Length: 279
Ligand SMILES: [Zn+2]
Image: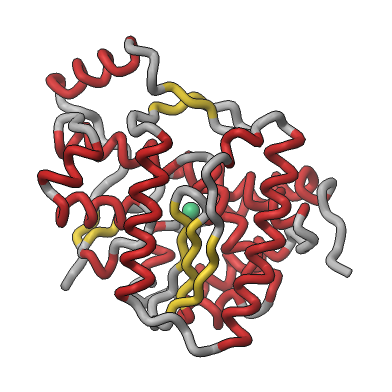
């Protein structure tokens, strides 16, 4: 199946704009991104994001092959657990520990040629074996895990889901959509979390979301004991690997360009203040 590319952040039609304004006025939906302080419009209640995530993640893990590579799986779990510890510390230091309520972290390595990795709400992480040659070592893995976990911490999934629900479904509630259009909703959900290729949807992250995930991700990896300079090496490897070829899913949803590399370079001094090497 050839995935069709949806564009993120399209302008809602006037009728759905009215719904959007109503939602904002109801005051239920504004949230703030940690670190950047950007206000975001999240229409799905967090409890619904978590229950849907646990359901969809559970199905994904059942329907896909968990890697038999024990060493690789152990590395994903070890690096992931260190990043999780850093995230918990960061959130608690910033009075945001509540935002991790209901998290049930899980790290799985899935057997697949796809170059990809993602994190769903509640800390449900999948790394595909296809990305390991590019992450190369624990530091590279920490770049990817830090970045993907940062998307979850910044609640980009809720924001993306909200935008797509407005543009595609006129602002219906997620719980209703799951009942009335389960297949389409699953397809959209997987697309929103960067796991959509096998469901036929590629939904690239916006520049704003990518910058936030890079920025937070650098701090998380540094706090976890991985040199954040590794982010420059990783994204340069990623860009080189897809030069002249059809880009892998990870690159389609996470465009790596000069702007990204330049911003990472700018954010490095801040991240290095958090860096204590792993002993
Ligand atoms: Zn990203």
